[in-house]
Amino acid sequence: MAGLEILRGATIAFDLDGTLVDTAPDLIGTLNHILQEDGIAPLAFDSARPFIGHGARRLLEKGLHAQGQAVEEARLDTLTARFIAHYRGRSSDLSRPYPGVIQALTGLKAAGARLSVCTNKLTGLSVPILDALGLTPFFDSVIGADLAPAPKPDPRHLIKAVETAGGQIDRAVMVGDAATDAGAARAAGAHLILVSFGYTEIPAVDLKPDHLIDHYDQLIAACIALLAPCPEPKPGL
Image (cartoon, rainbow, N blue to C red):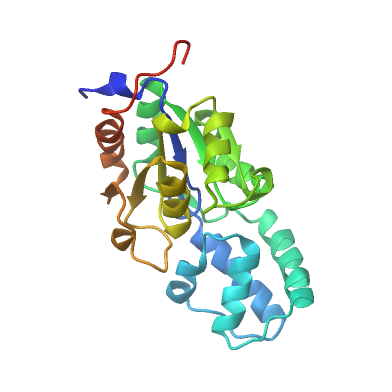
C-alpha cells in the first residue's frame, strides 16, 4: 500500500470494547447474571449493548435504571464488586476480535506504528482479554481507566496512552466507537476514526469523526490519509 512510510513513529490508540473486540456477549451476560441474582429481570441484548463503554459501574447503573430500579451508591458499590468478580473469570468466553483486526494490527506494526489500548475498562480486566485473544504482543501500552489521571472523555487518558507507548499526541490517531473516544480525541488534539459497528448511544456518524470505517480493512488507509499532513517524527522515533 502506498504511503505506509507515513505510519512510522505514529501512534494509533484503540478503544477496547466495541472497537477492537466484541465483548458485549460476556459483559451483558455478566450484567444479566447480577440482575437476576437480585431478582431483577434481565435486559434484552440489543437494549443493553449501547450501555457498554463507560466501565462496569456505569453499565450496572444504566442496566438498573433501564429496569426501573433506584440506584443507591452503597448498593452500586456492592453490585460492582460482584460484577467484576463474576466477569473476571469469564471475560473472554464469547468475546472475539472484530473481523480484520489481526490483519490491520499486523500491517500497522509492520509499517512502524506504535499501538496502544486506551480503554475505560480496568487495566486488570483488559489485559486478560488481550492475552486470551492473542492481541497483547501488538501493543506498546495498555492504559485502562485506573492508570489514567481521569477516564475518557478526559484527554489526559488518551495523552497518557500515547506517551506511554512512546509516541506524541500530534502524530496520534484515536480509533473508537463512542462519544467518550470522540471527546478524548478532540480535546487532546488527536485525529479521530470511529467504527460504525460498536457500542454507542449516539450514532457514530453523528459524532463527526475524521473517518468512519465499516471494516478494519479500511483502517490503514484512513490512518495514512489523516497522518499525511502531520509533522515528521522527531529523530529517534
